Image 1 (cartoon, rainbow over the protein chains, first blue to last red):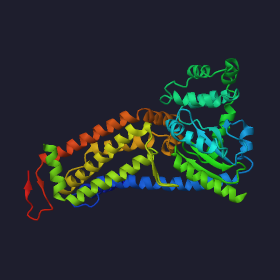
Image 2 (image 1 turned 90 degrees about the vertical axis):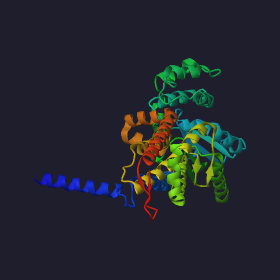
Image 3 (image 1 turned 135 degrees about the horizontal axis):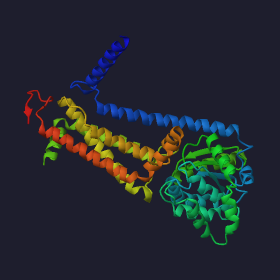
Image 4 (image 1 turned 45 degrees about the horizontal axis):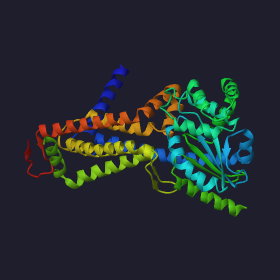
Length: 259
Length: 171
């Protein structure tokens, strides 16, 4: 009995709702409903991103000095290039299967390199964040193994130059070994023993854990910080060079003032 | 010709209103699509850039945003002047356009899907990323169909122009 009443009540509500949406004189119609819905979604996304950014900054400051210093990152075995005595550090969290990471590498990284790394203003450090597909971790494991032989950045270049669709098999074990064989003077036996035993699995898991603790929700994500980790800024997404320039220059000024 | 007639009927009935709706919807979705495609940035500086790999997607999202503007304003005209329900093609076309833009990138939305649905989410975002361009073409196709369906409704119906005080009947 109560179910019938509920059913009638729901039916009546549906009829009223439909009348509200589709009647001739109604101000609200479905088109505007769809539009308003997605506008609200957009606003909420902005709020989420902004609040997340604030949260991340707090987390970073809470665990700074011990974990997030240049020396700690180098000690962990993270791949890097640049002069270690540079005052700033750019930490890049990327996935080799992510097409926006490739966009960043093709468009922005070179400019960061020529403007900040080559003039010894910053050091570039790579962190693994393989979260785009099932094969992503495989690519990270292989890349970290090449780092043992000082070939990480060459392998990094090869992978992004040959990037294919996510999980299409372009970074399966066989293809990764083929890419590695293209590296000059690489010791394949040494690489295979590292890669086949998944030697760096826990290392990559730690990178993922660090990214998660920082609240990074997308690849590529970045931390721009002073080498002692006392000043930290976060960038998420494949931002163009002018945005990096604004952040790095501001940080450079802050760091100079502090010292 | 009937297509042009439908445009003429809608945009001449209240030019300011319907052109304003079209422009508003176009701009809103243009901003929406370009933010999720990581082409438009508001912080720390306002910046727009168009790398080579994004040109095709950018052209498609512009077409989708423009079609959305036109189709939404024509639907509003239909609902205002006729007791007709909104076409399913508008909903599916706009939904597909939004989904391919928002989920196809390595964006936070993609990550939310992955973290919420685990392996299935990863498969879904990988699919949306890999087939972003074909899905956008499909979205444009659906939007064009929506436009065709609306044209048919407007030109094939007996519409009472409410804006006209004489209530003249167009056929």
